[in-house]
Image 1 (tube, rainbow over the protein chains, first blue to last red):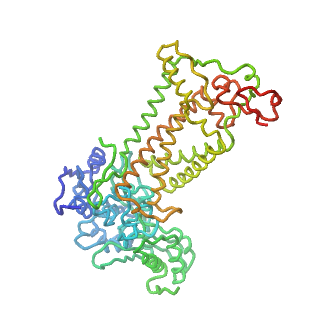
Image 2: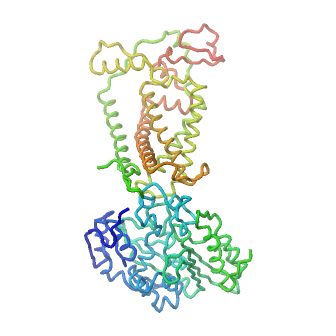
Image 3: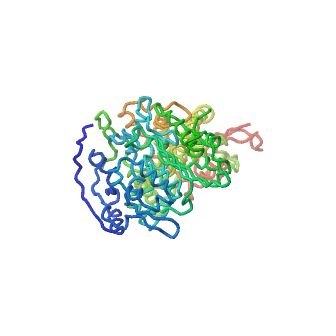
Length: 338
Length: 291
């Protein structure tokens, strides 16, 4: 396919300065509108001329969408808060370090300076067949080029694949799920607050989107309750190039340990499916048990139950098993014995 | 306005990928328009039904109170097919109009049930039922022409005969369902090669991009056609004058009065159960002893 790189297609640019104006614009333009946050994902699409929106709504001029605010019960981050701000914010570093750690592992410093938390959780899939503009399921077509014997599917899904096998590439998403964050969405019917794990959807629900935002909707903020402030955190990301890459897999966990036993826990992985997965079965299984290698091993095995590898991504099954094991049992006890 | 959605394949070929989804609404509107036009016609313009005199009082006297119409097997097939067909339509089209849910698994399971039930029906209808009763015959065509002539004010045209087991409209509808249903089923079976099922290993490269595209288009066209056809079927099933037929699909029989009013015993002979007191008498034309 002939692609003219670096020359964006013509579009009408709107730069609203308030959430109300942005929402009005998005509702007026509907399917024709493209929401531009930090632009880290958007400019790929536009410069490759794969997506050709008629209208781009640039949110960078909306002050209300920026910054971290303390709330009665936790903190609220505007969707346009940059990843660097999140990494450097003292309260986040003190109480919700899991999020800071996950954000710090996103891409490169320059990208983190520009990329936003809203953009990071709402970015599109990285499957190269899809990004190249091939008419796959996710692009509205009727085939998955990655899920074939010859398809390049090393980075693709091992769980919950349904026709499309692309994965969600966000690093901050599993951290937010583990922290029990709430996503604040403005829709035509008013404000809607959803649990972080419910913000993401798989191809079984909608094969063309990774999240619940519909045309006209706007993610305005993310709230983190104080429930898990200061808990025992673990975030680990595995990628091909350690300086700058999307995750092959990542894991985020928050744990409250009392008298040597796991009292409460939330754990999520990303890169294994089209949506970040909260591992509720693992949480239920390890609650009340000591956070050691044996518990981690059991948790790891449980986490990958039902995994179906593609031609080139079977390595993700032991990788995910080990990441979960390390999240529960600790990195120093991660020698796999089975 | 394009009736098909097109895409450029990796090989640079323009291929159809599926029908344009607005056709869903075209089918729904067509179904609704049919209701309105038909109901208006019956309410304000239709003339009372007129049939040629058929059968003798002797035949009428021997018709039982409950005339058997559909066997239990036939009724079970019909309702299994109905449930699977509604499941297929809802799982196929609700996500297209904004109601998102995990539809693919339910869709192929319902499609498999429908396929098996249709295969059963073909065998059952071919070897255990009166196969030709659902196909239009010469008398149907002749009577349809007579009805048209009389509708357009030619009372000199002889009145049509009463119906055989199925009126011509019913037979034509069955033909349309066969065309749409088989198109959806055959293309659907191929499409199951593109998703993970328990039946075949996934093989999206079984056919060329163009053939796959045409397969999806035919499946979609059959699907939207079935929306309109099923709407019309349900409409007729609920109409008061057709209630006796609908009830017969539940209980298996229709009343003697309705039978004599609409059906010709010579074209659809009634089977009299062996236990009937009249079954031992001489058998007139139009009555068949089942004993």
